[in-house]
Amino acid sequence: MVDTDILIIGGGTVGSVVARGLLKHTSLSVTMIEAKSYSHTQLHPGFDERVIALAKRTVDELAALDVHASRVGSVPIHHIQVSDKGAAGLCRLNARDYHIDSFGEVVSLRRLGEALQLRDNTPRFTLRCPATVTATSRTQQGVTVTLDDHSSITAKLLVLADGGRSLVHEQLGFERTVDDYQQTAIVVNVLTTEPHQHRAYERFTAQGPVAFLPFNPEFADSATNAHGFSVVWTLAPAMADAMMAASDSKFIYALQQAFGWRQGAITQIGKRFSYPLSLQQTKGVYTHRAVVCGNAAQMLHPIAGQGFNLGLRDAVSLVESLKDVDDPGAFSVLSTYQQARRRDKQTTITLTDGLVHLFSNDSPGLVALRNVGLMAMDNCPYLKQHFVRQATGFAQSS
Ligand SMILES: Cc1cc2nc3c(=O)[nH]c(=O)nc-3n(C[C@H](O)[C@H](O)[C@H](O)COP(=O)(O)OP(=O)(O)OC[C@H]3O[C@@H](n4cnc5c(N)ncnc54)[C@H](O)[C@@H]3O)c2cc1C
Image: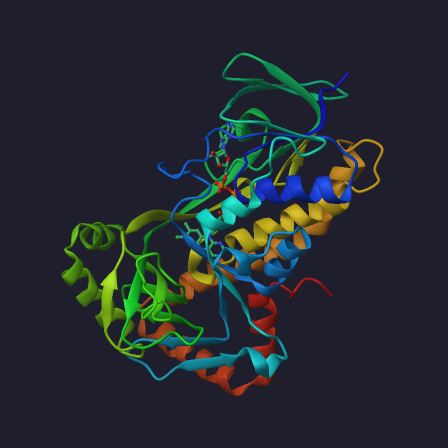
């Protein structure tokens, strides 16, 4: 006897998408366990102050689940510029050249989180929050989790969407590899004298890559809200510590040196947040009556803005695998899900990791190689098309 068909651990972005997809496309009952209550005064680990770029496919998939990025203040990306500081390599892309309205949208994770939250009175849905899973056990027919209040819940399938620091992971026999990049990302919102005009930048520098994503920061007013960017600046840990501790004026000076003047002067910055970066991968996506998705399955470097986009495709694919099945925890169902995810995961992880190594290295040979690469891409429609398909999330859909 089970309490629920599907038990999702983790109510962050990916867990919420799995829940919404299952409720919309299947008749399964869903219980979600989330450790942290959502509150405007506390940073939620899943919905913190990050700003993320949603690929076009992600925007479309979310809209199909009645979550519209444009209704939570997203800013579309119409142009992308990739460049290498101190070298000639430059690649420019315009969405209209590919007959799309935008490459994707930039959105606050906190506001996306608000839109994704499911109400506890949603039919077939139960939310246990705040509640933390402390132990698990399995039988042939089901999986039981014990919560920190000593209650327990039994389900046919356990979905681990509990992020990159999952403790339940090992209890269920999943193995994880961790490759520490020895880099830290600083996330900060800024205003510049020139309007963003829906342009996103990725700039490679000797200290590490810096991305400027068009975004309207909370401190912008009506005169400046088209002049905002969300910045992700990747640095060696010691340098990142120094930049986190620097005064606003010192920080602006250093960021301006790294990014250059293509948006005029940086005039104002918001609060800074830092994230240590690693590549984490789980070997296999399922064990008996349990699957992983999102950051619990893989945690990527933000260099290409692919983490949530890939996690969302995990979620969508899992829902697809669970449509019209007799037993959602059956081996054949989970193996279909694993097979469906293999290629996309491999390609996205390899590309992201390759970019980190290619663009976080200042050896003269690699500098020359990436400049030739950027120039070749700027002049080669086929390479650009390939890049656009990957960046918009459609590379694996045909
Ligand atoms: C600097 C930075 C920039 C990024 N930029 C982008 C971008 O531009 N585009 C993009 O696609 N991605 C980006 N990402 C990645 C993206 O933010 C993540 O991939 C995504 O938010 C992960 O969502 P998740 O739901 O898998 O995990 P999480 O957000 O970590 O959610 C996990 C949830 O599980 C809960 N939990 C954990 N353990 C338990 C337990 N035992 N019991 C109950 N609940 C539990 C936690 O409280 C949390 O709410 C970026 C990441 C960083 C660090």
